[in-house]
Length: 236
Image (cartoon, rainbow, N blue to C red; front, side):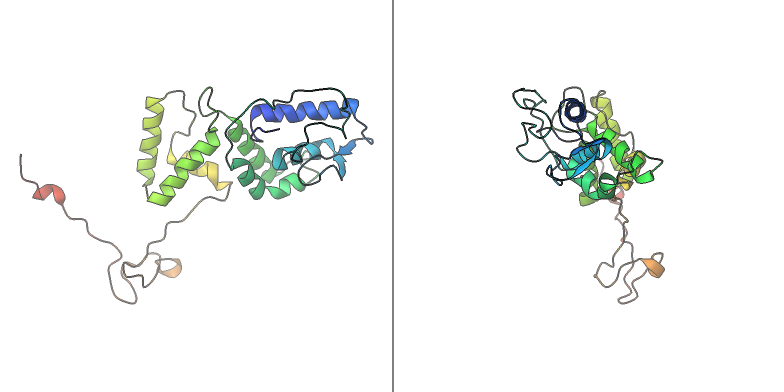
């Protein structure tokens, strides 16, 4: 119950819960009460919808005894003793793909959003390295990507960092380049566009002015020439 909702063991736990509920509970045809944090055992839905909701929203807080799904005196262990450090990846996926979780026809045919969602769920369930509980592959890569955006790292420097990390820690499960990282996060709506601004804050170089080299207001150059430091160095 306390696992990050995209860990493999949590996904297996959800499957175990559904097997138990349909075997020992009181299903109404193909439907059971959905114990997700949104439906709170009020609405009855089919198995695939309950699965999606539990992965996206998680169980009702405190629902450790499945009294609405056939558990009375049995004391089942659903990995409650496992303690993984949680991050906000599950909430991020939930927010970005909310319609996927709410749709009842996810498995009825090809659905591009559903494919993107489950691909990201798979990435979120992959360990950063064997035995790592603090980060998944997705959460660690996202942290690196956000640092790049916040501190203005170049694409080339980001790729170099990934290569260095992989060389130092071969078992590290990270993308090999900036381009691979970018494509991973485009589905999360985290892509960004770099827009230059006038050094005097007069204008932004975008839309029809995206290729201009001088500010329309103050005439300042868009680019700043870097001094040739090396030529000024005296030999030691």
